[in-house]
Image (cartoon, rainbow, N blue to C red; front, side, top):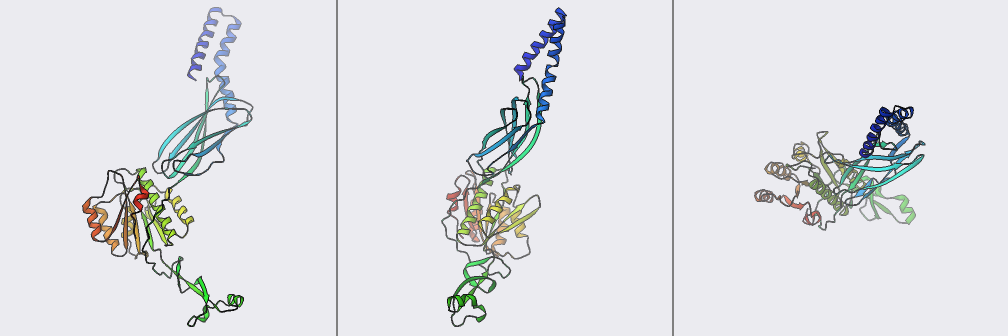
Amino acid sequence: MLRSRIIYTILLFSAIGFYLFYGQYIAFVALIFAVFLPFFLYAITLIASRKIIAKFADCNTVAQKFVSSQIQIEVDNESMLHIATAELTLVSETVFSNEKSREIITIPINANQVTTIKTGVVSKYCGEIELTLKKIKLYDFLSLTSHTKRLNKSLKITVLPNVYEINATPQISLEPDDESHSFSTMKSGDDASQVFDYHEYHEGDKVKNIHWKLSTKLDKLMVKELSLPISSAVCVALELGACEEKINQLTQIDAQIETFTSISSWLFEKDIPHEVEWYHPANSCAVKMKLSSVDDLFLSIEHLYNTKPHLGNMLLDEIVGRTIKPNSSHMIYITNSINNSTLKPLFQLKESMGVTVVYIKRETHSIPDELKKAMTAVEINLVEVETSTVQAGLQELSL
């Protein structure tokens, strides 16, 4: 564009000189043409811009880490005017860190056609990436003038965390809970709202539990085994982004979410009911979700992605400050900050439940030996997981 303007400036001064030296009618016409040419070109571009629409189309909104997510953009030119050069501005923002990157895509836009642009987004971290078509800048035929049209079309890409296999076998006792809607798949109980299993009638079985329709069909008395409602045996407490040095430490936040996802998948595999809890800074409160299925797990991840990281042990302080007795028999506390102020609430929780601390650390950071000894003394399990080797660290997990 700069080159075109330099050439135009030379031609304009040439037209002025031609008119001043010759003063003929043809020189005057050439001067008027040179002066009004940019205005004419801009008017054409402005008219064309009113018929140009840009949007996202047929995009995959779910992606894996380090895998390019294919993004398709359609620019529809409904006018009869051709745009030789257009610059489309695509902004990518990582929700957790608010880090932005900008890409300028240069394309021609043909008249009465839809121009398709294919690009990709690759993320090193799990979370949400918000893509925004901010604007499109249209140049005239000679690239002398331009018109910018605001678009502000957005698209969110969800980058899923990696799920690592954990080979340990948990030793967790399931506590009965009459008010729970979760039922044991291993043991029967006395809740008539759900059937656990059926067996043939034996002496001592309650007559009211006989399933008469099934008995008639099988020509023998069959008895319903009722279900046992149980509480969530494990609470996974995720202290999201508690790093004291920098709140937007994406490497550690990424490892925290992958650790939670892997632990939850492991508990599902072992048929252990559990729940997840995290702190929501915008609402100044803790958020708790019971996880009854893998769908619940992915829903919790979606909510986590909409939660901003925070400083300090906000979740731990909230849990300890409650007056109600916890209904879980064990808590897995995932954090990347362990210090002296963390020990007191952990010791208080240990009095009412089992506690396992999963510490997400960078290679140069370790928990001081005196803190490790203090936790060992009260039988708090400590698992240290490096951000670069999450799977290897999780193999040390034991409940």
